[in-house]
Each structure stands twice: as structure tokens, then as C-alpha cells.
Amino acid sequence: MALEYYEILLKKHTDYLVVSGYVSISTGRTRGTENIDIICPIIDKIKFQELFSDLDNNKFWCYQGDKAQEVYNQYFSSLTTIRFAKENQIFPNIKLIPFKKTDKIKSFEFNHPQKIIIEDFEFKIPQIEFEIAYKEKVLKGKKDISDAKHLRIFFSDIIKEYKIKKFKKLIQTES
Image (cartoon, rainbow, N blue to C red; front, side, top):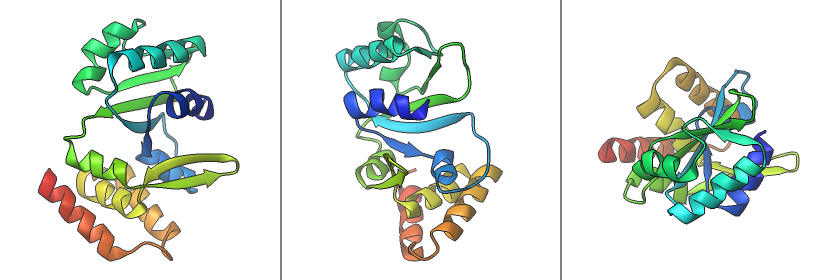
């Protein structure tokens, strides 16, 4: 499901960043998840309608409604998360999180990505240090702290603690 969604959404209609739990899972953490969180800059109504139509044609449905214009007006344009899943399924789903460029934290995260490759599948994630900082400073849930711990261990040979501290300070300043 994720690969098909990425092909439609990410390569064709908008830029993106995969964030949160899927970052840890894709690096070997064993835990379940019901969704894949993706941030993307807000797109205009026409691009959104094209995306929505393309997903619909590829047997995806939107939790918030079946008309692109209504979903855009009521949710996406007001920066409310929307979800898509394969027809006749609820889980797993894609949680699409729109943001405006005035959101300094999401913009920073989005504009400083790194790529991850799993077999032949390449996608973008935040800098690992940023992901750790965000999970430890903002999200703080049990699952998030465990994810951050996993990332610290998995990437222990390349992460830089000073960057995590810098990102935590940035997050605190902008929150």
C-alpha cells in the first residue's frame, strides 16, 4: 500500500517527508503502526483535486469524504490532517499532514531531508537528529521515546549529539 501511495502522491503531485513512527520502523524497530505519517506543503485546490482523483482511480478512499473540493475546503486548506486507505480497508492508512511555509518547525524539517533506501524503494525522512529531538521534546509519548531510543542506538555511529541539542533548542524557541 505505501509504495503505491508514494508513487501516486509523492512522485506526481507534491513533495513530502515521511515522519514519526515509520522512520523507526523502516530502520528495523519492531512495533506495529496503523498509519504512515507524511508531511507536505499545502498545495492549491487544483493540484489537490488531481491528487484526490488519482488516488480514487487507484482504489484509495479518503476518511474525510469522497469529494475532493469538500475535503480540500473543510480539511486540507485549514491544515487538518486527512487520511487515505485502500478501498474496503481502514488500516493501514496514510496520514497526510499539510503545513504552511510559515510553520517554521515543519518547514525546517521539510527543507533538510535525508533519503533512506530499503531494497529498491527510496523515500525522504527528516534528519535523524531532528526526528530524535522532535520525539523527545514534542511528542514525548512512550512509543515516541522508545522510537527515539531505537534511532539513537541504530544510528549511534553517525548521529551527532550537538545537533540533537541544537534541534531541541530550535523546537523550543519556535513552539
